[in-house]
Length: 135
Image (tube, rainbow, N blue to C red):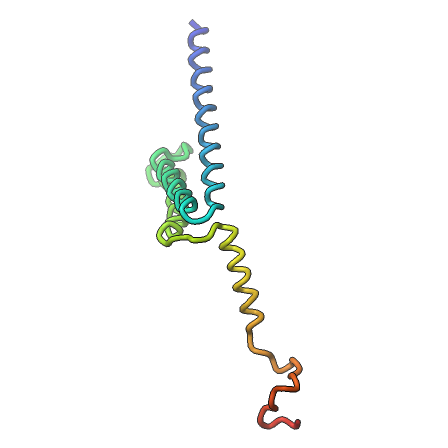
């Protein structure tokens, strides 16, 4: 009698391991496609949103005493993550994640370069003197 029960328990654990491997492959695919440009990027966000929606239904399986505690512990985190990725889905993303970061860095670098010269910087000889200067 113990042998069939042990076989059933091993089968359950094998199915969970198989599911864990599938989820790891899915998360890896979503992460890689988030780094690709345009439509792949959008498909990645759709995949993320579906994954978090699945987790809202399933929950994280932390034991809780009340329904409110269950919501806060097992489901609220997924709602926060959906709220963070939905704006990414609402606007078209022509750049990949690395492309967007490099554009932000370039824009910040250009902003620093294009800022007005301070009073402590020496003037070039071709600029006319400002009113009230002794030159």
